[in-house]
Image (cartoon, rainbow, N blue to C red; front, side):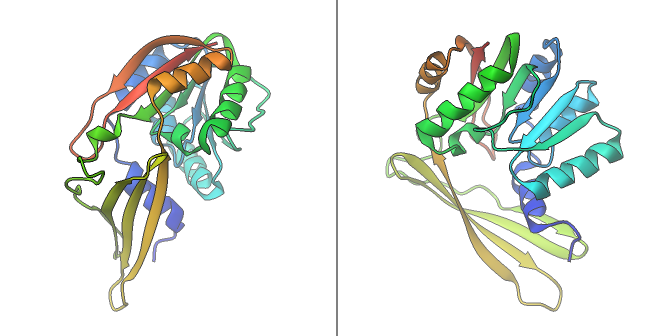
Length: 246
């Protein structure tokens, strides 16, 4: 079996290959006159890319195993990334940032409006004067659900092989639950000479419109700026990026 923790393997497999948003984060980072904060950094998909371009990056996540992998990869690459374990709704980092990025719908996993309010207050406290908070949210559920509220056609599974073991993540369903969209995957580990290990993984992506997030930003004392967009791909829905200024 791989020496990597399962959480790292699945995160890399299901999220690590996504690149559609990188050009936007690079553009915003290149325009930012100071350090950057990547919220929900995981194993470093965005943080390591920006650090490789010469940016001073702090990568924040609540998962120790993901951050340990990020730290190892940053050190191996000689990249300037500081990995910090913290809950984004309670972060107190003692420094400010010219740019705070929240990629891949992380904001839709914070526990509803109260969680987002707590995060926005923390983000505002960490923004430099004139700084920017850029938050990606999934485009409307009509982009991924049919009229019955289910995904019309499941995308291809994500597959990788590590040390002779095959890891497969099968998308099963995307179901409209009203306040959230339930996303189900079947994760399978197949090793030679051993029975496959199969488990179901479920996440709930909170329903959130750009207008609602912008209003919440105003309530937190942030200024609303022009939205940006990340286009959809064959495997991923598009995103609207809400832009809030300090």
